[in-house]
Image (cartoon, rainbow, N blue to C red; front, side, top):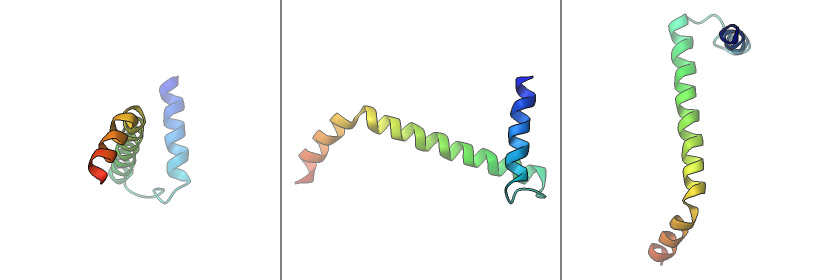
Length: 64
């Protein structure tokens, strides 16, 4: 049942965007690329937040 709900969400996203009417392979490629970019961006955000103290020391050391 969880898979069915997941597919319903993807179907609604596709219907409410310009992906509606595009070939299935293009829809899958576009959603996959968006997911990969979003995951990388969120991961880097948390990585920067975790290592902020180390980075500020480097910025001070190499900034002047």
